[in-house]
Image (tube, rainbow over all chains, first blue to last red; front, side, top):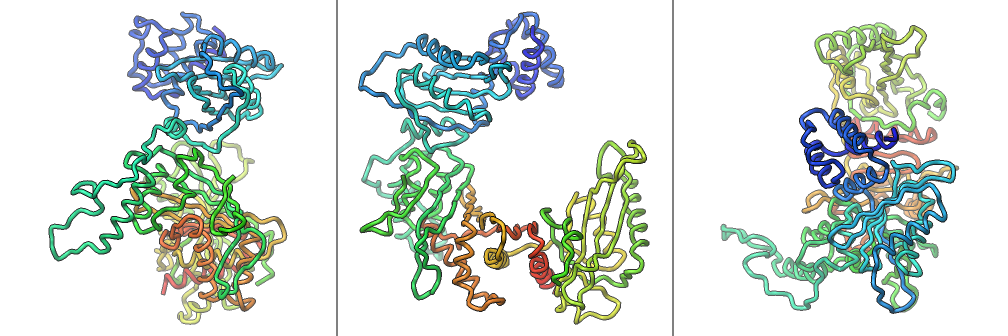
Length: 346
Length: 289
């Protein structure tokens, strides 16, 4: 077995938490159940990985099999990577039958015709997701297995999720191969990025709870703003205001869980406006700002701002449009004309 | 105070310093700096023997140097700054290997007249203490100074009010080179999911705003700072409908310096070093009094 393959397998196994190693090797299926029985999973990971490499040696593993193990790891730990979303466009309306073999052949063909040294691996999952791993080389160097790009393509949709490696120069080639293989004619990057691949899918596939109802159910005992106090001396202040905020929140965010995003970024190129009496800045140039919101769960966090008294209700459409506009990067410029208070986002 | 030699103070720049306030030192004698270095060295060695080892593994000899930074002061009334540096040389390495600086701390006073005026003769006022390096060394050195000079160290937190002073002041500074953005970082912790907001303004635009707010050159009032901040809050609210004023300002960052509410400061420009130190000295003194 090639030393580089052995080292790669060793390092991949080392990444896996000790309790998960056996399951992942079983999913991989390259080592037999009998072989897996011989492994001692109660020793330090260094030793476990060495033993795994020895077994792979017995089975003459090559880079193709090692790459499959890497896909399995990254599929399970997909949230460790940053994913961007791309949308492909078809020229015609034809709904073509998707042939996976044809797709793979065309994809490989397109990449290999441009770049000889490249490792391409596919794995299909039950939810119609095709995972593609590409390790990139140069005309003179073998592919770098430690910085591959991952692509997740749901064949029934025009969306592709890419976790590019640091080598961004290969992105155009990757995009080209995708549209050639899937019979689309164009691809563009959306302004939508997150670590949570599932949340990105939720947003573009519209799987999150959007509010289709315009009717807000009457607040019942449960799910209301503040719990009733047993002490009658405590009176809920501003009860109607609190209920108004709650209702507006519901109208915007719906009742279900929000897709999980970690940040939203706004590049503001709007004018600074102030009360003329204050005698402050009155430039004709935009007041340039960059605003970044971050949170372990951004949309839930934004949803709780108005009830906490931190924001007006309804919340600004700049924030609430994130899921249905499917973007979390924005450039905001002043809208000219009748409504100077509104903004346009290209 | 403008004649601070940039070469001597270069080591202060671009490092994150943790801030403390220090009460006046009793019977501190500048002539005895070498003695203090020796005593401190012995103290640290003893602490390590007691089992308060700092680094596991390679045995390190810690060398202590205590020096005066004569130019680092504000007025003639200020005491010159005192610098303490800990270097290590691994016992395993050869005799010619260089010492590695592992910890620095310095006491200073820049226009600290408010404090020094009201203090009896035996006391030396150096109310601001800045450290860079492992916390364990900081606490050892702090203990020694406390025991030896009967003084008291306290972490210097920086309130949102003071942070807004800093950002307003520093945003207005004139800089030759292209400057980095004026950034304010807010935290909203008490939500179901914590939220951090970074609000970064183009330095030219921030300065333009401050220039129209500040009415008297060379003087800054609380009212001007409030107007500046209100403008920033209003601009933000116009877009996002969020009341930033209700969030907690935790960090401000400009091309001159950056400051964090936990009492951590980074100074980036030697030109404004005295100004920054003066502000920090003032904060230290108000914490002491």
